[in-house]
Image (cartoon, rainbow, N blue to C red; front, side):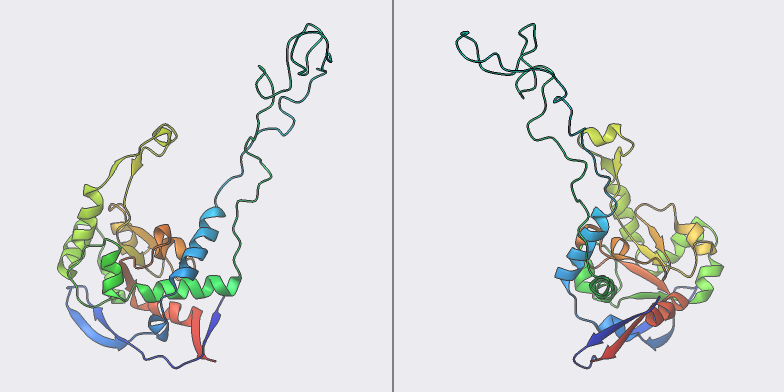
Amino acid sequence: MTWSILIPYKLESKTGEVIGIDGKIVRTIDLPIIFSLPIRRDLIRRAYLSAFTAMLQPKGRDPMAGRRTTARSFGVGRGIARVPRLPNGRAAFVVFARGGHAAFPPRPDEKLHERINKREKALATASAIAATSVPEIVRARGHVFSRDKLPIIIDDDVEKGIKTAKEAKVFLKTIGIWPDIERSYERIRIRAGRGKMRGRKYVEPRSILFVLTSYDVPLARAVRNFPGVDIATPNNLGILHLAPGGEPGRLTVYSLSALQDIATKYEVKLL
């Protein structure tokens, strides 16, 4: 599906450097106009909350829990509290009685998903893609790298030529982004609270996002086990990949073919 993004003013295009398999710059290209869009942090945050809450599962107790009882008040004049009681005199139903209902329990019918318009979501995703080309925003998010120009674009030969994690490590060191993998590894820690008992013991910071043509290319298999690394394709690239936590500026590596597919999917037009 393609999205047309209408802008009321003309945007200036940026240039990008394509990196070969040896880590050297092969050529310079004109980046798609999507990388010149303004960074809309408000939309990015809203789209993130919508995507995040869509994954939440509603939870709550039975609305009638603690209320299924024949208890009735005995009335006044007995020297006891006027609370609902069973025939044997034991209090029931009320929140302070054993087996009574909870005062304000979680409701399973509560609406957790914060919805967003489709065009707003598309604009937020496009704006988050543009944020990956601004070094100041990427560094402000905590990523560590030594390159002066973003985004990082790799030639299509790199997708097929790098087949092992050892080769991928050498390549990432050459282009100056391996320190971000080390940052993620050093900050892996045990989660505080009960979450550690529920299958999510460790917290792993996000590092590099690879946007490739397919999940089955050799490069994807080579880097998928590095700490904090995510892999996406142009078809499923979303706000959760580009702005974890709602903060734009993730360190991203695009393959040349994937970049062209993104330009086709998000077409920027003059209003």
